[in-house]
Length: 126
Image 1 (cartoon, one colour):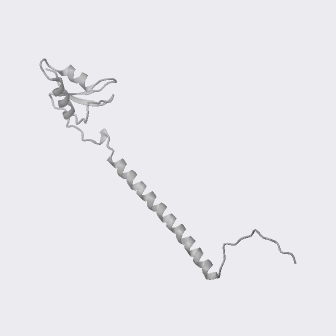
Image 2: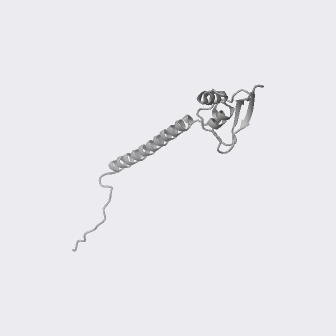
Image 3: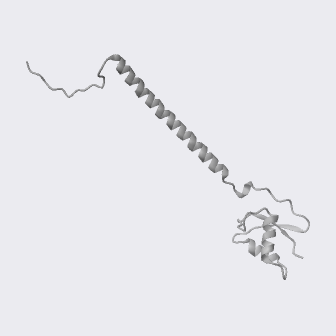
């Protein structure tokens, strides 16, 4: 009688109880992997949402009160700066830095950066 060598191998060595236990362990590991992925995705979503909610734009700020009779509304043109606008309404002896600060405060601006088309409330020149 001749014997042949087989390269076939089975993963099921042992009795049926051991096979069922191995299947349960494999299923438990796959469930754990899915739960870890869901937890990681949830954490990523929460972190992204929190990060984006911290970002604020200029449009979120409060609008300034309407202009009084001693003020006028101007529209910022392309290339205009707050410093140029302040120097155009400056009187002799006025500190330009104070005028820029007052314009920022009056218009609820965080910085001296302006955008074309933006409206500003400035005092009338007398």
